[in-house]
Image (cartoon, rainbow, N blue to C red; front, side):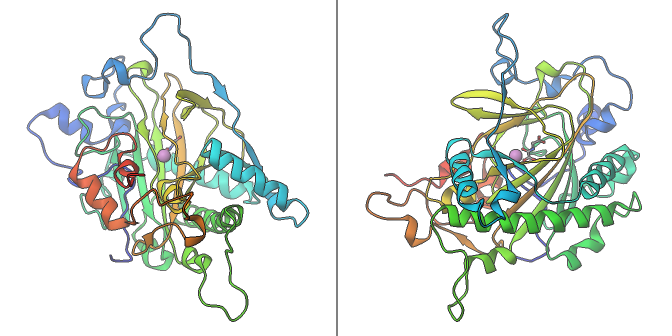
Length: 381
Ligand code: OGA
Ligand code: NI
């Protein structure tokens, strides 16, 4: 596959913009931001989910979902020789039991983070025509704007617009990134590089927490960390405008992420929910920290030990919400399979070999629902 990688994630397929005779339909294809330029007091039918898929149970007095305090991993402890063993244990437990953790003291300067949120906010505040330049059905485009989740397949649309940027190799993709606002490329590329370095440190810790040797001794052959250093990175900037009837729709439907780890930056507005012990629980944003979650590739690589957990996004009536997810994995050409150390008689292989091409084929062949891709790679045990 070409290195100018596919600016897509989760449940996407082509045909982003197909002209439709139905005027409303072509309006919805232009995104939620554009729809909301004229004040609206009701959610159009296109965004209304069937009752059983709505964020609140239909029962009266059932209340909002509870808040969850995610396990915390302190990155500075992970980086200190004395703190590392205990931090590795916290990391392993979080990946096994929650599939999610909050990463604090990560060392990325607060200016870089604030710059990314601010630059993204200004990107979406621009007139529709600026975003329209990047709306394309070309899946190999290193930059794509769109709306909903799987725009060409979703019968009901999600209340979300996005900008997806392929981040590597940076020198090759950067000239394609939006040049308006004028500082966008600079803030977004700095953010992409900082999150990639953070991912590499975290991945080394994840490998160690699985009992693997991330780097070979002097003179030994290649290492898995070398492959991650050449890996893929996709940045997804999500914009969730205020919604007049937030209980009827979702910003993102239940899904899992495809890569090894996702680093999620959210502004101060609640919205992310994760599935925990069969319930939906709301994640409280902690200022300046990242939410990190295990993706499908890490679940497959760890032979099921670390969990890729379903999550979804609620919208709200009063505030616009922004988030930036960076999805990291091995190079798109790599096959994902567990290393021999993680497979034995007591732990037989749980998933088929997986590569990016099989993921693409899967999502373009069916309506993506929940974590079907991972399910589709399961071996009978
Ligand atoms: C994603 C995602 C959550 C959020 O981009 O894959 O799950 O809070 N985002 O926007
Ligand atoms: Ni996600």
